[in-house]
Image (tube, rainbow, N blue to C red):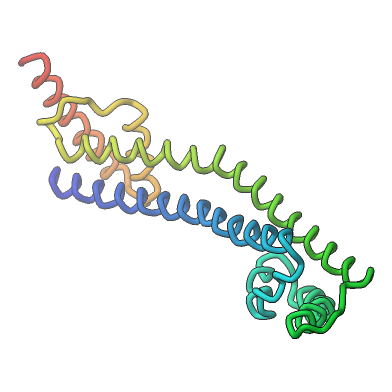
Length: 201
């Protein structure tokens, strides 16, 4: 029963670890959003003519996480005026942006800068809170996994915090009282073995 129970706990510890790791990866993916927005800002800051590097479809994809399709299409329709000027310039036609077209570009650039800055702020908050908490949880689960794997042959006892964590896992799995008692007995047996290894019988 002990070995089966130990393996069951190990499997559940691994599943929880993997779940926390996926949550962390999802948070860190926000960095990709920052990079995409930053590249767009930098490109347009170099010259408004760089708008030609971005198709309507690619801009729709970038903005779709932040605005409704109606707002995006209205924005892109406005940008078509500036895009036409850029196209004419590429053909050698001597046209320049007028005030209206410049304002359209400035408003769009300011909007994208705002999205980038908001993403950076959100990312920093998530890293400072959620990611650190997830790292802490994952570190404790890894410690539990090591101690369960090494069992009585290990050298580090399972501490109160880890016992609480393991019991919480048992409760989450809707274990009955019998299973929880069995978990405690398993942990106690491991700790007694570890104590014997370290201090002699």
